[in-house]
Image (cartoon, rainbow, N blue to C red; front, side, top):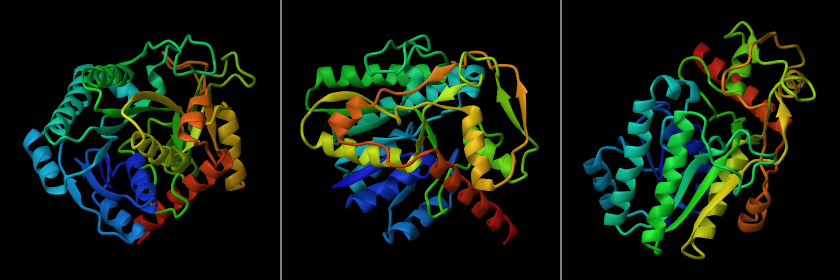
Length: 337
């Protein structure tokens, strides 16, 4: 079975490609390299021992996408491509709507033309209403609090409408919580352009001396240590969830929304302490004011993933920190070469 992975050279995409190949799938990568390294496809081929077809293309380019489908004839798609920075989406809402929505619409139309109706979509826990009770269930209220989250919310509705109109589609929307860590080999990981938006890569850069100190946004939340609590999931566990979702698609035509998280919350300070244990030294940090719109607590109810996908995370916070630090050290070593 051949799977086309959009955003296949990105952080989550690259790890998903490795899991797919190890599970026996043929994989094709599509990425416009706007937030990923042009070296990644070659690294993935080296890691998997397979020549992986790679196409540098923007999903909004219909003709390019049609050529890829005609050439590769995929059986299914894992759709990970899209802009993902919450803060940037607040500043550039129209750009986010144009990029994330139009790329998905074009992809769906080309899939229909090619009679390819198996799709796993990269959604997000940002679709949930921040005032919803914890843990967040797939049936919890939907009320995204920023343009990025709303693109995911709108795409989910688009996918459900597509399935309602044509029950030959098989679609799973995976609602990620907070991906973290890197591949244990240290060969692929999260390498954001500019200042990291996520806690783990920022923490890694402070640990490596790239940045002076970690800013902790908010110390007065109603949590045990006053800092925000999130559900961090190892990126390799997240990637494995995509493989299981594909296997569910092969069973029947359906539309499903499924949380991918650990079901447990970790505070910012707890994550910092775990990283310090890996390093064997303290990490400089500074408490600053809360960011507007940040929830105090967010973590997943994972019962549906366990029951339907027969999937659950195998790695903990220490593993995420250890693998993230190995990746950060590898990046520093490459710079020195």
